Amino acid sequence: MTVIDDYIALQPEPQRARLAETAEALRSLIPRAEEGIAYGMPAWKVDGIGVAGIVAAKEHWAYAPFSGSVTETLADELAGYDVTKGTVKLAPDQRLPKTLLKKLLAARFAEIVMVPDPKGVARDLYPDGGLKAKGRMKDGELHGPWQWWRKDGTLLRSGTFDRGRQVREWTTYDSDGNPVSVKEFGR
View 1: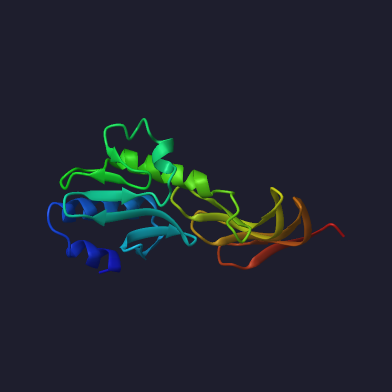
View 2: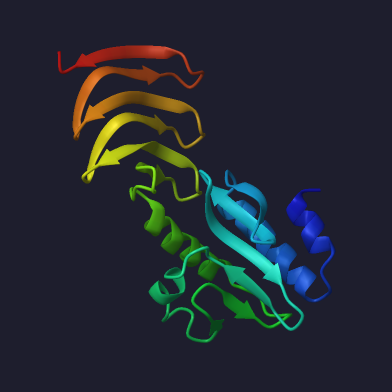
């Protein structure tokens, strides 16, 4: 049992069934996401950033995209739902279709991909939420150390940029993490 499963087990029916169903769908769509509790609800995070949450309420249950603009972006697809800026509210027995869940996740990923956070760190993601690349940006250009990962999560390459230009040592790794090539740039 996880903390998410523990939360779901405490909820009344039919919300419990809808939450469990949605949790399983999220686990299949973003299997490498970190699971936990955020803002008092089950949450899935990618590289520390909230991308999905579910919560039970007395008269409904809700999906939270951890963004105020995802519901605006998908306004047409969400036209038949009770939507607030930060949640999609559903009747206690209402299902959230997996196709819509995929769209909600894709819209959230689009917001966080290659957009530097307050610390200047940007990331690229695979569609399943796995980290594809991560590093710093400065004035819209790759700047500083960067790393890339394969779809299975193993490190592929690492190197450094100076305002978008490759510099210093760049290393490519095999799937066991052993360096297979090293190349110098800018010297």
